[in-house]
Image (cartoon, rainbow over all chains, first blue to last red; front, top):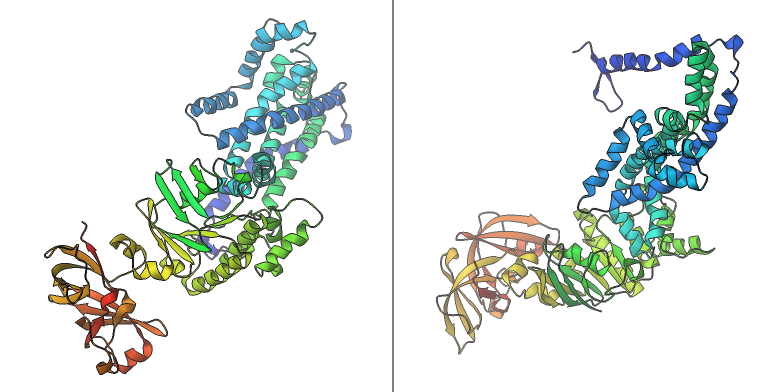
Length: 265
Length: 345
């Protein structure tokens, strides 16, 4: 033991070396693929395949729309689940878990069954000229279903972490429930909600399985990556892959770092 | 202001009493005191007056829960400003309220950077900024350490008095009750006694109230007889070697009946310095067990038979009699301070 435990940590307790060693090894395993991408890329011959730039626009634009819908519809649901208790609530919990746990491919099939040209909703909507497969709305729909449960789970936990007493006090200070939500619940839950937004953003942008089935067109980055891989080969996907990281990561990284550095009151 | 509330859930309780100036509602934990405050603030369903039926945001109450519930994401002045309407003067007015509780210098601090007493005063300023008609305090003395509690409470009470607001503080702390204008005692989920603190403290209406008020000299005795001519009832204190005590006549007590009786520790007197001037009313012999120095006063524990009698005595007297552990002494229980109630199991 004495060889492993001989360093004093900041809190004065002996610091174990074994976890640090294992941790370093794990980190190396995690970062390995990213490092290898840096080496595998032909930097001297870095060029896009036709259609790559279009897919970037598709992914960014529609993911943003999907994200707005997710936050607009998911936030009231999360708050409601966090604050209300009633008989049979477990059924709702189960439904959310179910959408979270359903494999993307299966979800894509379910959505096609519902929104496809022969599905009950798809047929009705098609009457008004709106196609819910292989269209922009279908693309957003696929991302919405793929990312919503992640946002709801994260935001709900964040709202549950807000002491109810503070919301009650806000009301005794003359605030309506609506004002209380915006002035107390939301500011106190903002780190968790931000994490939920970041998670939903990455899920929406990276959604492949559902999109593949419901909205092969328009092609966003994930489907385009797959197409490039099939048609041309591995080296052809690296440039778009770099762009994917570049557009997907800033938001969650910023939010993640901000919440880590946040002065915790 | 008259409070009249009936609550069915989560505990069933009924409370009807007057709030005059700084009123303390005294009750043990579990009596539902916090529940009552939350009901008055409109935070749980209950029937009653004042404010009956209004949603919390329309009730003009300032509610200070235990722990004060300051908003952790807001600075001290922002916490106070939370209750103020938007406008150019908002910050200036919040700072004014902070100045009234003498905290203007910590206006920029977040709650975690404030001491317990400071947090309490910020919460008070915030509640006052709402311009309430009634202030509700939940266990205001519980989070303060014993050394500063009385001082902080006295300050809080004087600040509240400056605003001229009726205040209802619920507490299980008899010290706080002693500082109040009025005390209401809650026992078994209803109000059993209300009055000025001195009156309630010296004449609790039942053994349970006496315990709640912190009286320690509670004993069992047996009615030995009545002397109508002298206006006294005789009580035999069997545990203290059968000492006979004389108390103001209570004709309803039956001879032979078991009773519980009490005497305030301040009504247990050391022998007078000039015995010829004061006739002893109820001499009791005891052996000093321990002396607790409380500054100007001493708490003295006397062993009387198998019971322990507490007396509060001035330091000068303790020194005069050279009281020390093991010493035997005769003390006097003031007749008019003896209270007794039929024994309840």
